[in-house]
Image (tube, rainbow, N blue to C red):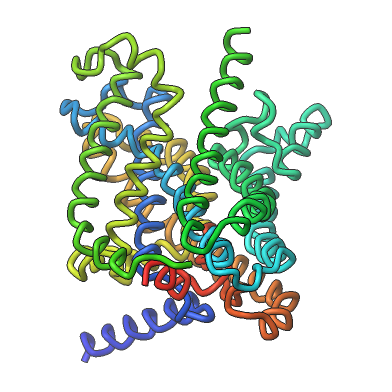
Length: 427
């Protein structure tokens, strides 16, 4: 009888969790990318669990004896890059459909309104609570100017605020700038792409994107220099991508492995002698983000067109569940890790780094993730629903390209029908 009661309680909790994550409309999401989003968030956490205690001298510079394990854990910081790759892909989908097929242009107003209500309510409440609970020095008048930069998403513009208060916030500044620029970039591309014949629009759009990448590399180089030194698409494309999917997956993973070892060797020279070449040291800062982004892009492309066996791990409901609450998890995991370091780490004295690392993850599973689920349910989701009041009338009257779906994490599913756009691009 007790076991039956426990099962019923477990089922009730499961149904409550599913109801809390319920969002609309589900049909327009790409399930496998929920899992990818969760993976991106989790590897950022595994990096912070590895790096923060090391920086605070809780454990040594090389906490684990296996250098390959150290390299993989250190590489977790590039979960942020994977977030950026997903943002670019998902948010650009409806604009790509309009560019290539002259569908109705996505509503810029709806795009901005959805971003505002998706990001701001949870961010501002998190910012206020973190200041009140953990960073009360920002309440002092001499820090008000710095705090103001966080309220206007310019915390990455000053050394006094970059990666301060709550380190993950700096990436929200980048995301917010991207949100502001994306519709303008897409409109600029339209001026070029719509001037060519239908059959040449895909390569023209790709050329525009490559131009944006080149612009990004150039601005990155110039910025660091001055800071530190003075349609008609072939029906065979989809079939080809499906056949190439395993090879794209393998190529992406191999490229990531190379970048994992290379990046770690930049911080700890001579760990991997293959990367001790002077040129690799000098120019890593310029191309490493691009190489990692392209590697992640290969993996995402393989998942989108891959077989069921490849997608299934990322479509697993617990992983998608993490993906759905990843915005809250991303903002709140670091403050809670500091709480554990302050109050729990003294109890781990004498434990090996491997044992302590496992206990940190137990803290993540038992405390941080449940808190973030509740934050999603009580803060994020009401904010999204309130934002729907400003977009639903427009969405009902718009064409599918204008989009009516809404995101479920800090990287929205898309501004249009993601599955439809993806399939139309390659059918």
